[in-house]
Length: 262
Image (cartoon, rainbow, N blue to C red; front, side, top):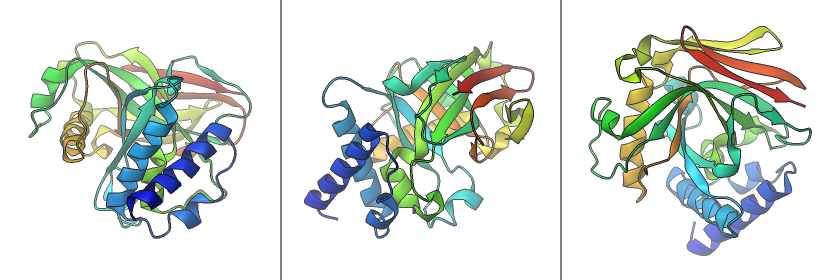
């Protein structure tokens, strides 16, 4: 895509996001979009949704962390997308009827960054020096399309990979000694488990995915910043909720989150 085409697609996505209406155009408009161009569109969408000062970028999310998730979409590997300040909510958050259009839940670790990560070559060990805290968290994803299964991998990247909200829950005490790979995460809706998985599903562990993100952003001319909130990846695929009710996520033995969808 040329710059004019990227700008036009970003304009349309940003307008769709602001309208909070079903974006039935995205599958067709991004069918031929390349992975490289999809990030250019995503960054342009970020610029448009924050240009008026009513919102701001708050951090990043890691998604599609398993080969079984990204390979069918013909993507080169895991992906990342933006998180907006308006979407960062504490546990107990209530989402009123109408948004998200169709909500889903993912069980994730949330990291808060203590300082910028600009050096590159980060590992699961070296990225620790840039982390202020970890929290048991959740991502609220949104199916804002006529048929999400028809939206390509690059199409999802362009529109922030279903991102709606980042829920920050229980503070993880002494996180430096936690075996993130050995954790078990789970999600439930109205008291029934709807998804679960091990910490290893997140590229091996939350620290591995965080280091990957730090390095990947640098490849795209971006970097993790002090204060950024990071969704490090879900231990299970997104599960869309059947309707209104309470959803919870939990890392067994550590804590979790709770939300209400009206």
